[in-house]
Length: 141
Image (tube, rainbow, N blue to C red; front, side, top):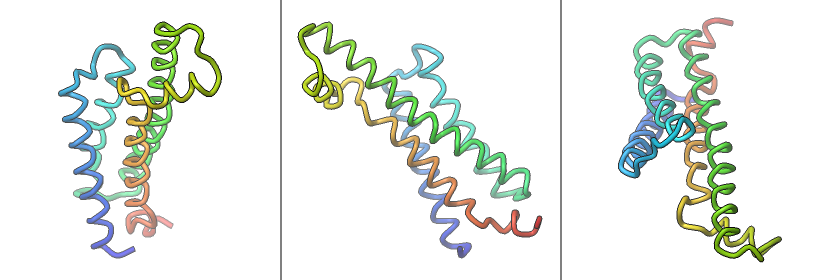
């Protein structure tokens, strides 16, 4: 991968992380520990992006990759949690719902958006793409 492509991926990652962070803060996404985790991971991503840019070593690249894996996992867990909240809400509104109709209403609910946490997964994958065959890891072995 060229240095230019790597910088473009990092730029996309940073724009996405800043956008998600601002959105989560504006939405007050900090009511419990589960809601704070994405904010902590976006902050860790910003810090690690600076570290891996200015001090690219095997250790910093691996730590950056660990944060990116946690970002992706948080996206999966977030989608599950949002979906569960939506299921519970839909059942409160209409206890007779079940099966495909319950699933459809839960997945299409606007609050919380069931698939929105998938953004964290995408950002984590972009970060991992940034580290693909990173020069700092090539020098190590």
